[in-house]
Length: 364
Image (cartoon, rainbow, N blue to C red; front, side, top):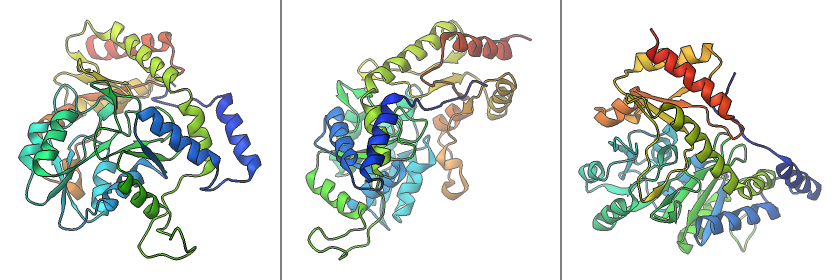
């Protein structure tokens, strides 16, 4: 079986974890926590970075620290992983979905502006599958309506917009380190920001809202959203290899593009001229496909030893957030298939995947 994804864990990760174990600092204190935060902030070209227990808790922490809660509305793209919506829901705020751009699969600035009401407090653009959202237009909307812009960069470590790394393009950015992400800590996340006040508020709330001057004294309801020192050790080792990981992602995308570009009904990941797509997932769209055809193809590939996955379902199609579907998100989801893209994937395996795919689609 050729899996969709699997983490790369090498000698450096083992070395750092062993060092963490030998120190005895295995929980949420230890030198790897601060080192990982500092190095990640430097990589993203921001002033501050804060580890969290997941990307989801990172998003929730940002929203709570910004004071978003019941009676507020937060706009998110309709095509995203459900965590984006759930983090908003946890605060008591209303989830408002906006349609996406057909090429980038990221939230449409026009759809955002059409969704704004007097209750809107924030926008969460998602850099879906590694492609940055249109941050200049979105930031302009944020300034116009006095809204917070929070980047969901869970899948976009190292992606760039107009030469700037994602994670520093709004008031905060949130990354995931789940096992299938660009770099991993098993489970975990990171929040990036240039806002010192927000950083300090999030750090306070993340650690049970414990007083800095009076141990075990709490004046607010806080959270245990901390990362362990062992996880941070893995993360730091992974971060040290980020450039080589991204080069491998580019290489894998090029393998697929070489094999599939001549098929006009097949569309691989789009990349705007002023952006850097890091191709977190090989996101293939098959023109004219509907959901049943997509699901049948995925089952056929699996039988031949290839794991593939559907695009995310539109948030607006799910029972807890159901509303009238956004047309582009619905169409893109139904015709979208994600193909294997792990770091050790070989060109010969990509050739087999593509030949099998073409056989399923075009050979009677």
